Length: 231
Length: 218
Image 1 (cartoon, rainbow over the protein chains, first blue to last red):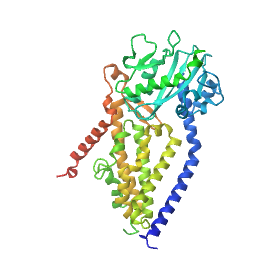
Image 2 (cartoon, each protein chain N blue to C red):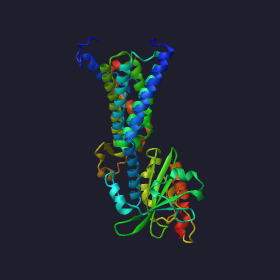
Image 3 (cartoon, rainbow over the protein chains, first blue to last red):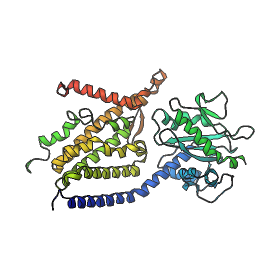
Image 4 (cartoon, chains in turn yellow, red):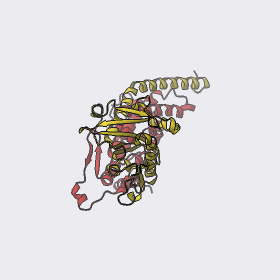
């Protein structure tokens, strides 16, 4: 056959595409279970980190079962418990719905000393892409016990610093309701506001948009839990 | 080339050694700079990226070389792209399954190996006109020539930028001792930003050319 002819070219391209597609489909199918497992484990590591439990890919599963396990809830904006499995809720999808229709997952973590902490997952946008995090609250349902944040592709050294301890640490002890019970969330502002400000932490220099993203994520994410937390 | 030629003849060895030095894809041909700037803030992603690129360039070279007499000239670039893209997706999937943490750090840059000029450059310039074995060696050489620069740049950027070195399997090693910080030493945050990768590559080029005057253009 004429190797420069149209027929040969078409047949060649078609055969190539079919072969390549088959190989890629096979690779994807084979590796998919391991990949989903990794994503699940990474989520468990983050959940545990928000209550100060350090885990690795190897220990996360067991620690998760021990501290959280099936102790999860799904609530609606009005604070009622609804059907669903908290771990399987995709926040990105939920955030596209109207606030009243969203499902709000909630994790209840029992620490070694018997204390129960509420963990609320958050998802928002930074400068370059998605950011997400987990914030845990004390039994009083308003004081922050711990927080952890991560991001897809914020600028290293600037926005990416939100996943560092020095940024996460100051969240501890802050409150998301003021003394009269009004929802305040936690602001991320330069200098962390006035001394003794219970509702703000210091933002990251050079990472203003990412810091703002964290602030918005906290506000938007926690708003849905307001009613539940007030009770 | 006669079929009796030994596998590692002087000529074949040159296919590997040249790209490491006088034909280096980054410092001499100035290809693949984009990812060299992006993934070199830490050592571990740079190492994984190097291995990924070596894998892709070797296999795409061999496959194209095997197919070189069958590829219709009019769609040869498309054929090359499809094969490179397929290999890159395989690498990406494997990293997501077996090196999840690193794959998160490399994020989009694994996918961007497709656009790495080194790979298409080697396919066009070498694999289309040479036998599979030579093409494989050429791939190893160019992949390693790219990787070695990436690793050198990442070494200095992480050391001076974060005071640590992150190695696969070993985690983050704190190289700069705490006493230095107590005495007032500070990490150079500028090293972590992409411009410093460019400057580091520039310094490597300078050192290389000052040692080998043949490389200096008149």
